Amino acid sequence: ELVMVYEFMRTIRRNQKKEEKLTGMIPKGQESPFGDFPKDFPKSADGSGAGRRQLVMRFGASTLTPRATRNEPLPVASPRAVPEGAAPPASPAGETWRKKSTGTGGRTYSTSPRKEWPEVKPPMAGAFKPRRVVASDFRRFYDRGDLPVQILHTATSNKIQWKVDIDKLDYHHYLPIFFDGLREKEDPYRFLSVQGTTDMLLQGGSKILPVVPQLIIPIKTALNTRDPEVVTVALRILQILVRSSEMVGEALVPYYRQILPVFNMFKSKTKSTGDGIDYGQRKRNGIGELIDETLEIFETSGGEDAFINIKYMIPTYESCVLG
Image (cartoon, rainbow, N blue to C red; front, side, top):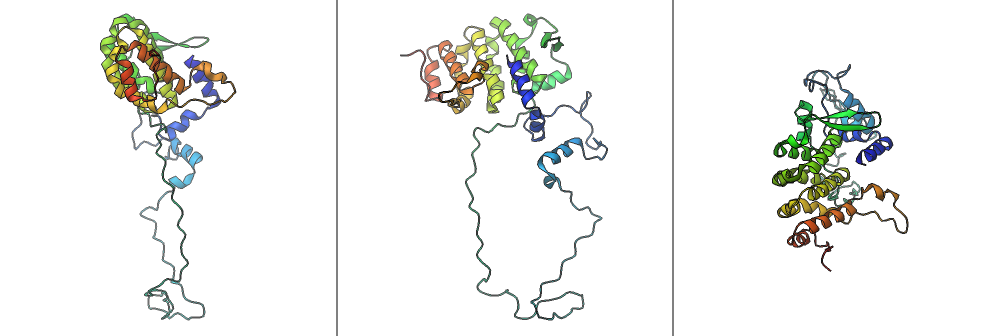
């Protein structure tokens, strides 16, 4: 389902990833299969780089105006202004000077009109603004070939292919790495991390519970990006994590203070359609609805202390168990 949504969004917004890379919102990939080029290596015929030309085409050349070099002469100062009708005396250096009592210097008042200063509005806090996504450990390990996964290209769609049996994987090592890749927004890292995490959670069983403390930092990092695309994926994975094994819901209760602050921010972010119909709700991409579903799963599987801890972090939450 997520793959279909990603392919549809890539069709209608073809240059989204390029724009996010140019603005620094998502990390750039390697410049070659063997790594990045040296810094002094010219990346194009003119030595300016292709990224520079794209940045100029999108944001204009004013931000990349070249500066004067050391060999260029400095600009010569223009002669000073002289009132009309006055014959300025020529100085030995060839400069002209103002006549006596013709300037405005030394006066105790100003004859210039009052300058109207523009009204400065208070800046926006940007609480809901997406943050910059930093390259994950999953990207680094996959580029080095240290992960036992690869993409299986078929006639209809791409699938994940495991090089080893999932039951034989070390969950303490691999599961936090796959969780760290949930914040990736570029394929193949996004597809492999989301599908690989889902497969490991569905087949993990009792191996998942001891690894829960190591999953908190990757989950918190993905949620703190505040990117709707990344937060939606993290919420779906959290639902699968809680349902994957017994006692996982109770094991997450002590870590609600790290996870739920972002829930409190986006809980009311729902689509208001009035008396219309939202035909896209079948995709389950609404952050507000996903947060409500996730909190209800936390309460029902978190034990008797789950509700009071959720209520402490999200005061507007209403219990789905208590009457």
